[in-house]
Image (tube, rainbow, N blue to C red; front, side, top):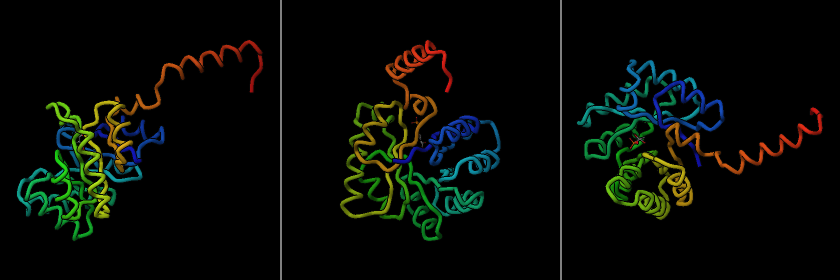
Length: 216
Ligand code: E4P
């Protein structure tokens, strides 16, 4: 399973890249707006930090304008994957971008059939937003499970990129469902290797070792 960093914060992305856990990055308009910086500068810096796909989203709502924005975003770096929303116009743009050899991540997916439609239009990635589904009392991971099975049934090359992850439990369940990628906010990324027994175990090992007065 690949781990992407769900952030437009260059410092966070640099840190996760140093841990060796950043296989890619996903941004969205809200995350880029939060930086208060020109989007192209931020995206170029991110693309220099990570040797993997970096999703950047179009902000128009009609297909011709999305196509133009997508091509502009893709010119920033070969790492850029263009995010289009799963609307009719977004799917038209996704198909046109894919036909031009530009990878597309179809975003704001909340149902398995939206994901299937995106796969049919040539999406490289589909992004189910599981946390937002949980927020309205639905089971986000169940949609991931359905998407994985549907793509497998028809041998689509499209990858399920699980988004809107709020906890390590989300990550664990997405991995069990066979999702190809999980995009993780920094706070969840930090929790992945945390376990209280690891901390206690390490403390005890080191205390015992100090008593020997040896160095390695
Ligand atoms: C990433 O591609 C999505 O935009 C992001 O995961 C959405 O997360 P949120 O629901 O926490 O805003």
